[in-house]
Length: 222
Figure 1 (tube, rainbow, N blue to C red):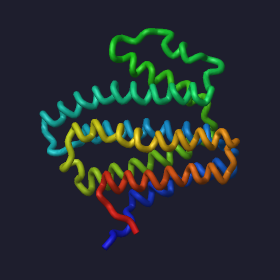
Figure 2: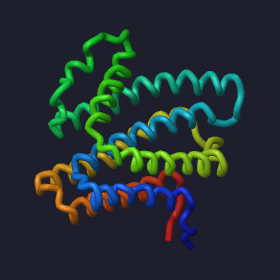
Figure 3: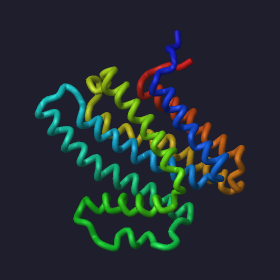
Figure 4: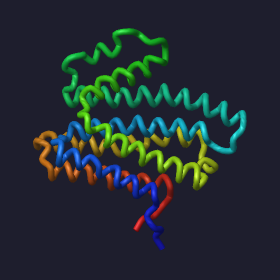
């Protein structure tokens, strides 16, 4: 018998509906929707680091392992997400004004170049985001916070996972979700971002999020 819809899943659906407010009342197009979904990757990385730091059982070795792997994850995932954002900059033709090359105006040492890439891309894309997008991003942040608190801490998922699993989880989500979202966004942009297609794009994201959520947490919904 299927379980009732969980609190995190409810917040996931509601938070993903917020962009439709921008579509209907602020004339958001597919480019803005794609930027929002890219920014959500930053939220996912943020909470993934928290998961690494609060994995159980707690102890000195666990804390040290969490610190070491979270630092590695920050650099690796930061570079991966930065490259993803760089692709959006080029794809959406957002390189007017400050050029992409200026992201690397000053060389950061060694592996920190990946963090430099991420910081530069965040600054570049943040300047392109409409003011109202912060509320949509905060809604997504709150949704992930609820999932972290309820599933990972309250239900004890932190006792049944490993650092290696946490290292891989965000990448699987990005590859599965964003290939479909970017492909859909490209099509919608070519059509001039009509509202019906934007609604479909948002609904595709919601359906895929639900499937990924259920797979991750092994839940069924009615």
